[in-house]
Amino acid sequence: MKSEYEKNPKGRADSPLPAADVEETPRPTLKWFTWVVGSFFAALLLVVGVVLAVNPYQLYRVSICKPAYIDSHAYQMIPGLLRHETYETALVGSCMAQNFRISEMEAVPGWGRVIKATGAGASFKTLDRFMEAVLATKKARHVFFMLDVTFTTGGGIFNLEDQVLEYLFDSAIWNDYQYFLNWDVLTAAVPRALKANLGFKRHAPALDRDLMFAWDYGNRPDRYGADKVRGGFIQWGDALAGIRGNAVEQAAYYQNSVETRLFDNMRANSNILFTVCYAPYSSAFWHAVDAYGGLEPFLDARENLMRQMLAMDNVVVYDFQGDPITEDYSHYSDPWHYDATINTWIIQAIAAGRGRIDNEDAILAANNAVRERCLPEKRPTWMNELTDKRSPK
Image (cartoon, rainbow, N blue to C red; front, top):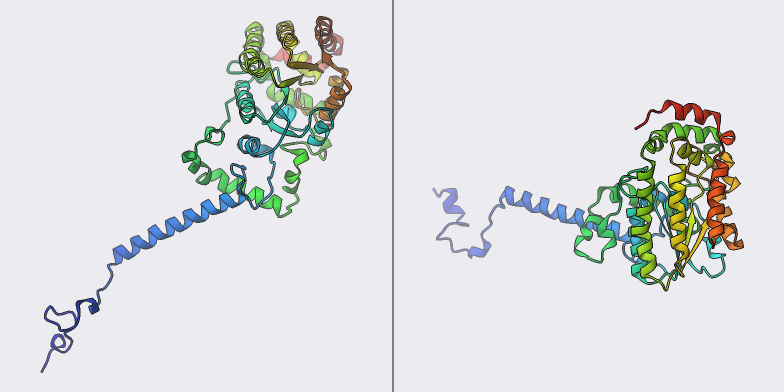
């Protein structure tokens, strides 16, 4: 009687069957490894495809979606927008500049098509990076720069962190993997861009280029008023209290930041017109600076900077920090931040030639206007109470 082995010679060494016809059972380990590797690369290709198709940071021209100009993504979107969009004027600034409407700026004679390079909480180092990116494209013939007193380099009133992602600004391709394999891109930027393009009510306004990176759409009047200014002072007052006993040094940080970052770019690009506008904080800010002994050092710094800018043929200066509108707290959410109606008011004033600083008398008058806003009888009583409670730093 023949054994099974004899009955089925398939696989025997002396089998007459061709070797190619011999079946072998795949090793489970190799099969599992192949499946894992294949799944990994399939998922990787899917992720890359989704990010490339949606392109939330506008790093490349290719995109199935319209840009969603969400203010929290401004830092990431600015490099790509500056490279790919067409413009004649670039607005550079912090959150004080984000609520300007592009249509209103484009209505100013000679400004042409406008783009915004603005980011909330931007330090002078960050603004300098924005400026360099604007100048590197060689597209802008005009830069509109909103000058903040507080946002200086390290050691200023607010010692802000630099939020620039260098791989988005450079021209290298090899490090773009950080774009495709970025958790924030996958879980925040891509979904928000898709929701905006799909018409979700909360995200849809971000598609409006006119509101690029705006945080005030004019639909939250409840966030402004004297109570909000007082609340903001309570929240951020410790930072301002740092001026006490240190005002000269703080003002020096401010002046040095402007001179070493902004002025160098102005002098190196004499073919470009720079319009510099001092952001009109509420008078509460200047009251606090005065209460902590910093008013005159900061006004001296303003004078020095204005004189240097007037000596440059390609610079125009506007100042609204001493305007009576800064006493109307219905436009302010804290001592610094103002609503979009102030941005509109600034553009209208510039278009009409109001607020321009073009000679020595105008410089002195501008500083005297700030001093007038800071008269003791104009200081809110709640500010006296709060500033007195804060101990010297």
